[in-house]
Image (tube, rainbow, N blue to C red; front, top):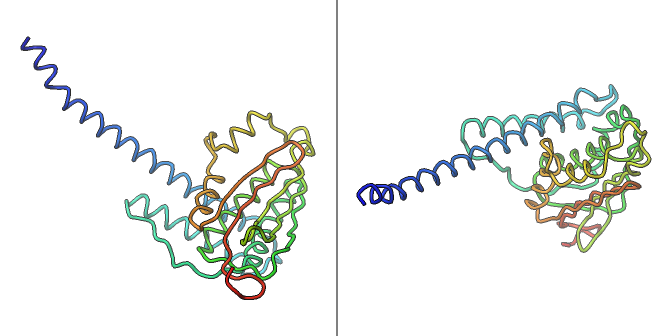
Length: 241
């Protein structure tokens, strides 16, 4: 009976220790995920800088440098246990944002045997938010299409539901050379974020939520669509949307 009582008395302590260990493991896992995401966001602009054409305008390169610096700062804060900083939201012209993103990745698209063009149908659309985060989201959508989609890629913006919808569309895996295709199960795992390197679309989802928007994706062999909806600050007329 004494041994049984001692055993039972030890359960609360054991349960507490197990809970503490689980919480520590959860925090460690979240920290690793956050660090991996930050490293992912550092690789993107560094790749864009490395592939930049000699004729690229300084503002395009400056945008890549700014994103790399932001990712480095995030890594430093994660490593040292400091909270991330969010700059004040600012009005952002969506066309300039998309044009810069397309320019950044045109060389990468050519290397992958892809064409990349911008279709603008959203007037003078202006959103409010973090310029770097929105640029990161666009970069991830474009690079995802280059690496996993069809060779014909378009970035389009159009009015939608009182806001602006950015659509990154590709011609589908079926139009790629056989060597660049992947099985449906592999595509589903990648797009659902279950792969080890599924940080890009997770970034897009996070950025969409932080800006009061929505992200959705439709993947098919003959054409895929990635749609990022954002609320407008100002439409063509200059009035509140």
